[in-house]
Length: 108
Image (cartoon, rainbow, N blue to C red):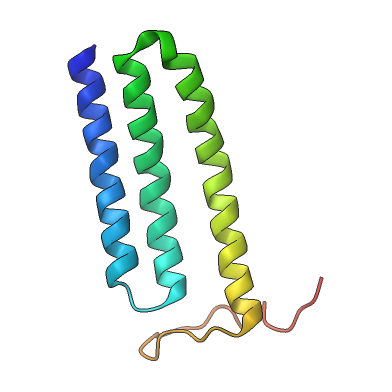
């Protein structure tokens, strides 16, 4: 089980690395939020669950932490993206489509 937990944690760390690389390399805030969310949600979940697999007495605690990550990370990134739209942060100048037009200017 320890080898399997190490592999799961390693895959999670790899996803975290690619998420960080995406945040560093992508051109605008919307692409960065997307890279940061998708990669770090899966990466953090796998890293935490891998620790739970390696340490079976911690498994249920790490599962609760992992579920919290799966729920809270996409919600917080949605809030960041929506705040960027509402604040008027522009898209990258080479963006092909702008699907945010319907959200701009709508106050709730």
